[in-house]
Length: 358
Ligand code: BMA
Image (cartoon, rainbow, N blue to C red; front, side, top):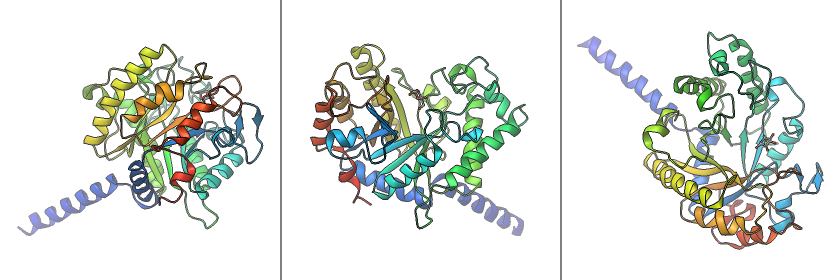
């Protein structure tokens, strides 16, 4: 009897720990609450590398194509860690990590939301994230694999950089962290055809467990497959890391093909994702999106906005404005008016709309 009681207590304790593990804590918990409050007001506009470069400028401090177009910063800014694993001074898009730190902190301190993605090199071949010449890469970084030790050092470097993302008062900044994205495509070494479901999940867990072990309580984990058009629960769950490991459901969605295909695929996906998110108590966002170079200047308001308006979406993040490949207009681009119209829309939130929602 006594022994049974002890066993029961142990089981209860373990159960409690597991349940605690499932919920974000500290800064991440506060950010999740904040995102939920913001979502009740509408959805946020976001932009990758917004303060780093634009259609006609590079590296000038204080500039932003979005701000110069609509008079306000995006609510969400995204940055990428690709290259931190190699101890590079600049990321894969030539942005110095010191500058990423500076802008990320500045955006948080002005009341904005920040998100980080990671396009690491290929640890087995030495190529880029897009080197898919081997389907053994994920396997090689898992425990027992030939690149495991190297990959542990890579994870340490990610953690070391994350540790430096603090306010002037030394408080860790809450961040939406979005690793191993677009995993249903096969263009990254962690993609669908490049590893098994079990290997993908082991990769996700290994990074998450390592950062949890280091005590990061400021990360909300975003799981972001790519535009698909045919999601169903059975398929989606295969690589879904689990409710205890995912805080935000994301989707990356670009219009590369026809408008009709994009609209139909995105609508089908958001029908699925919005239901899935609701059922599992999660927020969801378009964690990357856009139409390259906006050849149709009305695309943002005519194609993207009406779809997003139908769902309780948290934010959308337009990808970076690099000279030959940009996703947001600047004031001189014909699509400037559509971004202004988004800014005027009551349900689309920019920095000024969210900075006081705490
Ligand atoms: C891709 C492109 C690349 C870039 C990468 C990471 O979508 O924009 O040029 O290197 O994202 O930012």
